[in-house]
Amino acid sequence: MFNPALLSYVSLMSVTPGPNNLMLAASGGNFGFRRSIPHLLGISIGHGIQVFIVGVLLAWVMASINTVRPILGVFGCAYLLWLSWKIWKAASPEGKEAAKPMSFLAAALFQWINPKAWVMVINTVILFLPAEQNSMLAAAGLAVLCAVINLPCICIWAWLGDALRQHLLIPKILKLFNGIMASLMAITAFFLLHGELALLA
Image (tube, rainbow, N blue to C red; front, side, top):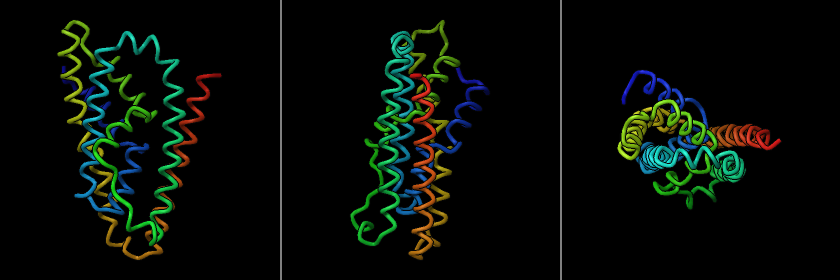
């Protein structure tokens, strides 16, 4: 099942900027790499589970995706805007004490309303799921490979955030960093929302 095209596709889709990676950069910068590990694992394992379920239920998903995807996209973009606000507020001292990194479960569940994740998963299943094999085993194998390829790619973003952490001890720089991350996430949300709404037109 594994081939260079799969490695290339999943790696590029995993490492390019998107909601998950912007959140990881912010998490690494605010909480450090180690405290962001549940968030990282939640994304990768959640991605693998999503690939598996979509692979097994491909026929149903393809029949209903045009109805379901815009709804999920709107919820996902609304959630991204809320996260943008939380990241923006994280720069203030009063919000900093109560702040926590995203949990494993929250990160895994977020994949189901992340528009970029849906595009990635559906394309991966269509392009790389072997049709001649048992669908359950083939989907399981593809899911594991995708999770394994995804994890080191997204680790880069949390590591970059963590590498900046020493500089972020200065309140003004932390506020600027969180402002940039929040703004990029909000722009991403509006860009994705525009794309999802265009599908309905």
